[in-house]
Length: 277
Image (tube, rainbow, N blue to C red; front, side):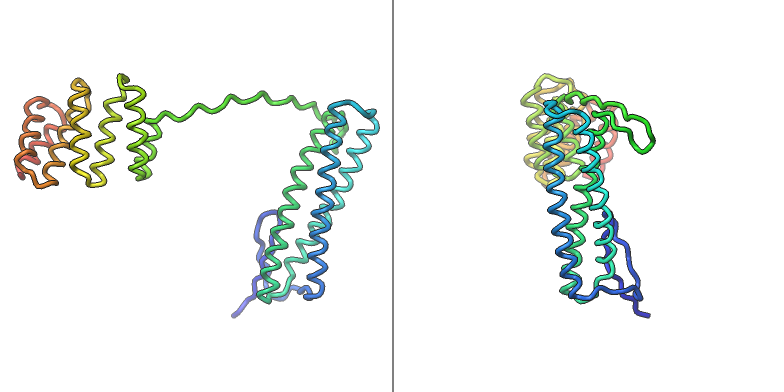
């Protein structure tokens, strides 16, 4: 059983309209286009008036009574435009299914969405102006004057090490490697420098660039001999030699690991690998 579904954009949500609803004649569709353009022009004009009003309020050029009346006038105009936008959205939902008009319908719907967004923002600005002038809202209470928010401090740049870990997890290995190198260069004596150097080796290893990985792991062993990452670097170095087919060197490295760090989990794993070599 076939159904015709017409796309109707209303406040950013797509509402399906089933077959059987009334349709808009193509000739009337042209009128809708004119209405949307008119609404957009009116909103731009109101936006200009709000900007001028904000400037005048800040500089105190006009008496408060006049400013309050101007805000009320703009508010009424916005309510009138809001009703026309809703009506246009409703009629767009009844547009015929012809492909060319359907595409135009989507375009008009997008424009009305934009007009609605502009309207929401303008309503917020008007609310702030009303609060500043002490205009009573619908509840009958005078809204409190809003304080200007303090300027937020600029966000601190992400630590290269943390960013590197994040990129590694996202499988952006080249970018991650650059961040780890940056960290080692900036903080060569920090506690995480050995870890960053180890992760450089890991980025190569996961890319199967085993020769580069071996050199990177070797930097951990040479530059940070007291680091807890040394056993892991030796293990991965031995596995990299095995992957290259150099079993002799792999045995030398893994035996060194077992002898020097016998109680580590890496040594236990190295023993299992040695049995298979």
